[in-house]
Structures are given as structure tokens and as C-alpha cells.
Amino acid sequence: MNAPRTACVVGAGIVGCATAHALARDGWRVILVDAAASPGQGATLANGAQLSYSYVEPLATPAALAALPRWLLAPDSPLRWRPRPEWAHLRWLLAFVLACRQARVRRTTAELLALSFHSRDVLHRWLREPGLGEAALAAGHAQPGKLVLYRQAAQREAVERQVEHQRVFGCRQRLVSADECRTLEPALAATGGGDIAFGVWTEDEEVIDAAKLAAALARQTGSVQRRLGCTAEGFVRRSGRIAGLRLAGGEEIAADAFVLAAGPGSAALLQPLGVALPIEPIKGYSITLPVRQPAAAPRASITDSARKLVHARLGDSLRVAGFAELCGSDRAVDARRIEALCQAVRETYPGACDFSQVNPWAGLRPATPSGRPLVGATRWPNLWINTGHGALGLTLAAGSASLLADLMQGRTPAIDATPYRPRAC
Ligand SMILES: Cc1cc2nc3c(=O)[nH]c(=O)nc-3n(C[C@H](O)[C@H](O)[C@H](O)COP(=O)(O)OP(=O)(O)OC[C@H]3O[C@@H](n4cnc5c(N)ncnc54)[C@H](O)[C@@H]3O)c2cc1C
Image (cartoon, rainbow, N blue to C red; front, side):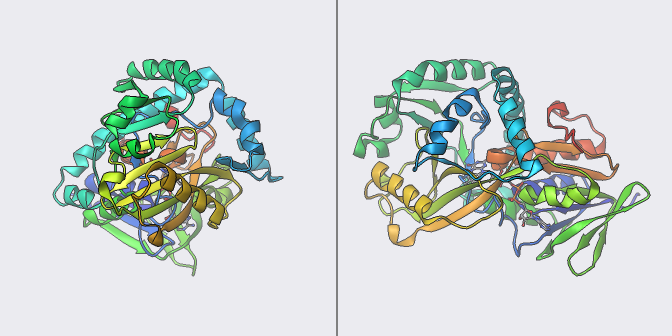
């Protein structure tokens, strides 16, 4: 019998942990490396918790492009941009603008839906494994459905078109009236939900705490060796292959194959190899706070499309997340953003939460211009990539991990891998 091959996965966020899990299930011996002391500490840590399989429309759309000037000028805008005189940043922005064309958006949405539905199938399969289902329940896994609230009646036609377009790909969504929104989510009734014009209801959307899922995936299989607290400094090349991963301190980890899944840290690790990964860190914020009055807090996942915020109930807590800041790699928490999140909770669900225990957080989404992740081979025969999941890393992690494992095993993947191929590599 052949000895198992060794794969070194760099990055123990939700994407790296899912990749480690998929490879271990395939019989690989996996070494999972991360600079942090535990899995899921990067963009994964306190994200919006949405397994948002039917809401994958990218950030780059004609509507987003049209709204940019307004968003950039408004003081309370969900978007913030600090221009940097860097070639990679400018090239990313240009590619983002080009990705906003309607035909591209349609194609990208279809490609992301294929990956997200694959992701749902894979995750559901994994959650039937002994131990993982229980861990997922402890991580707040539930299928409460998702209600997207719209405040302007004028948006209805465009939303209706999007729902129709997505139906072809298997999304089960329906437009609902403002009254139906309050029936579907009684917690909205306390305030009348504000000025709701209409909503879109998707009953099969799920939630889970991403960091807890990442930790469960990383410890599920005995063949995953965790090297936490180890910062990767770069890859070592020999004879046209990657021979090792060099850690701070000089240690070199040898493996048969290497997977780069370091989220926003991925580009820096590839740069010395002459590869410019088109990934921009997009900062977002969240608060997690205890629910004081369960009946006053939402059960369903709520997306407030006007404020660009998502609300998820995770057991006894409420998580609210949002905002998009293109301001480099600074992870500082802006108190004004946190106050805006608290204010949204106070206004939408009065009396529901305990504000004496707010847990504020900021994280960097590893975003490609189009919103499509980069999953696949590079020009080095044993270096693979799984990163760039932007606002959808939790949703797409299991699907991309399984796709990559198929490619690494030389199997035909369950979905077409071409759209996610990292062409720049
Ligand atoms: C506010 C917010 C809300 C979000 N909400 C949702 C949501 O509701 N649903 C959803 O699907 N997605 C959501 N996302 C997006 C999702 O969180 C990300 O796409 C996902 O976490 C990316 O996972 P990752 O594993 O690629 O990166 P990360 O989680 O950032 O993990 C990368 C890991 O690599 C490690 N690393 C980096 N460089 C090195 C190095 N040199 N050496 C060693 N280790 C290194 C880091 O320590 C980190 O642990 C949200 C993101 C944000 C910020």
C-alpha cells in the first residue's frame, strides 16, 4: 500500500479548515498552518454567519456602480474607500468596474450559484459524519430562512427580475408584502419593521457560527496536524516545484502538495513567486450581543438591504454585520461603525438585546474584483490555491474545498471548475 501523500494547507480560516477536512477525507495527511493560536481567527471569526446559498450576487453590479458617488459622499455610508497609489490596488479597481457590466454580473451570479449549491450539498454530507453534526448544532447551525427587506417600492421590478433569473438555477425565493414580512418574522412587528416596502423570502437559507465550524472541521479528522502560531514567510522553490513552506524562525515544512488558503494574507505569500493575486481586503464589522427577550429578537436571518446589514440569530445571541471599507489591511475597530450597528438593533428590535455585553469585531474579506473565488492549480505543479471568497467565504467554503480536493486527486469535479481557475497564477 502507498504511504499517504502530505498536503500543507496555509491558513486555518473557514476555507483552509474546509480544505484540510476535504483532503483528509480523501486520505491525505494534512499539515494545517496558521499564524493565529486557533482556527477561524481571520475574516472568519465573527462574520455574518449566513450560509447564504441563494444570495450570491456579487458586490460589482451596475446598481453598485451607479450608487458609488452617493455612497462615497454620504457621511453614514455603508461604503468607505481610501485610495492608495499602488498599482495592484488601481488594477483591482479597474477590474471591479469592468465586472459591473450586466452580462458579466449575470454570468458570475450563475457561477456563484453553482458553487454555493454544491457547497450546500457537501456541507450537508459532512454534517452527517459522526461528531460534526453535533459540533454544528453547538455552533448554532439552523435553517431559519432568510428575509431580505426593501425600503423602496421602486426597487420591486428589479428585484422581481433577479428572483425570476435565479429561479432558473434552482433558487426557491418569493416576493412578499410588508405585512407578510412581519408575519414571517414577528420580531419586526414591534417597530412595524420601519418603512418596509416589500421583502424576498428564501426558506431554505441557513446560519452557523463560522469560527466554531472551522474549529470543528480542523479537529474532525485525526490526519490533520495543526501547526498554529506559525507564521508562513514564503514558499521554497526547487527544480520548478514547491519544496517547502518557510516559517518565521527558519523552519521549513516539506510536503507533496501545498494549498494557499490564507485569505487576505494570500497575495503577500505569492508575490515573491512573481504572481500578483487580484485580492483586495474589504473591511467589514460585526457586533454579537446576548438576546435578553427571545420573542423580541429575530428567528429568521434578516438582510436590511437599505442599510446593507445582515442579522443572524445564533442560539442565545444576535450577530449583526455589514459595511465595506477599501482602506488597506488595517483591522482597527471604528467605534462609529459599532455604534451604527447597535443603533440598528435598538431601532429594529427594541428591548431584544443586552447592550452591556456587546462584542465588537472587524474583519477583512479577501475579495476578487468579480466576487468569484480563485480555486485551482498554479503554474507550479504542486501549488494550489483556494482563496478570494470575499463576502461569501462561509457559504462557499465546503464547495470550494471539495472542488479543490477533486482537482488535486485528478477526479472530474461535480461542477465545472473553469470559472474559478486562478488565471493570473
Ligand atoms: C463583516 C463580515 C461579514 C461576513 N459575513 C459573511 C456571511 O454572512 N456569510 C459568508 O458566507 N461570508 C461572510 N463573510 C465573508 C467570510 O467571512 C470570508 O469570506 C471568509 O472568512 C474568508 O475565509 P478565509 O479562510 O479565506 O480567510 P480568513 O478567515 O481570513 O483566514 C485566513 C487565515 O490565514 C492566516 N494567515 C494569513 N497569512 C498567513 C501567514 N503568512 N502565515 C500563516 N497564516 C496566515 C490568517 O491568520 C487566517 O487565520 C463576512 C466577512 C466579513 C468581514
